[in-house]
Image (cartoon, rainbow, N blue to C red; front, side, top):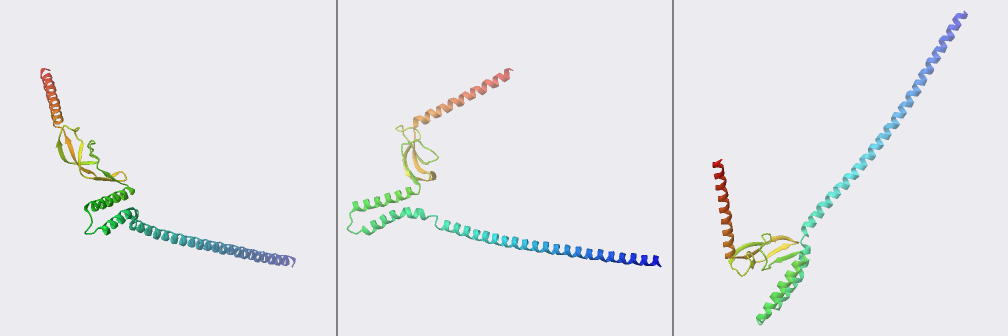
Length: 218
């Protein structure tokens, strides 16, 4: 009888231990599930925050693109504003000259007004960087000049600008149109140059003949 009682007590204790383990396992599982839910909520909040930042950045980028396009359009639209502003005094002078003309106007006054308008125009264009190429008596420079005529003369050095047939222009030191010019050509200089070239050519032929003779003797 005593053995049965002890066996019964042992079985009851084993069942209690099993139930305790099950309860501990349930508590542990419940705790882990709570941690997972908390982590999931944190991740979702972080994703929402990142999405909000992304949308703000996209909106800022699109606004920047729109501003850039608008500024570019405005730049093209008003690129000539500085030039127009510089030309306004010349336009005012021209307008004044036109209004002052009458059938009774003297020829000298008309010429004077015309020169005044032209001087105002050149001054205005100089303010925006325009320079005139119209100097004579200087050596020909293919960078600034385009030869239209050759004048044979010994009164000026060879290849000197004798006359500007059409003025050239530079904008901020960049040539936008070379001056069309007449250039001096010295007849004696041409003959000397031709004679010098013939002498050099003859010397080269003599050198070639000597070399061939030397090779033949060898």
